[in-house]
Amino acid sequence: MSHLEGHDALAVSSTWKFRSPEGRTESYIQTCIENYPSVGLFVNKETQRTGAEELASFVMCYGLGLAGMLGTKSKYIGKGYAKNVMKFMCGEMKNRGLVPTCTVEFSNSKALKVMEVIGFTKSHTFDWIYKY
Image (cartoon, rainbow, N blue to C red; front, side):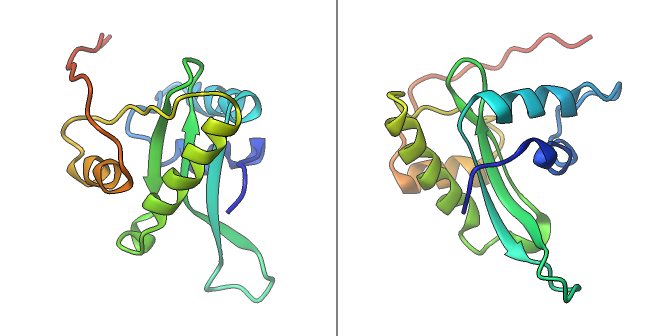
């Protein structure tokens, strides 16, 4: 488990359902990684002998100090990685004087369950977004 680095932005953006078709998402994510807390769980690539590591699960903070973009690559789902990166992120946020808070899409039942299991309490629900 470690902090994400700028070059991890492509791996994160490729999984985010709200990514921009114009390609601006990777730049935004890289800026967030470089300026706010972020956590990645890396595993050895199963198909290479080079010892290279693959980003399996991750979470990062946005400019408002909220954790979000929790993601796990499909082949690693069910191993508890999301729970582990989110717990680690809570510690990172506390160390920076932030109150651990996060955003979760209310239709994302798996992420909601992770938050509940690690001790988050739902405080607000909203369902508005500007679509262009």
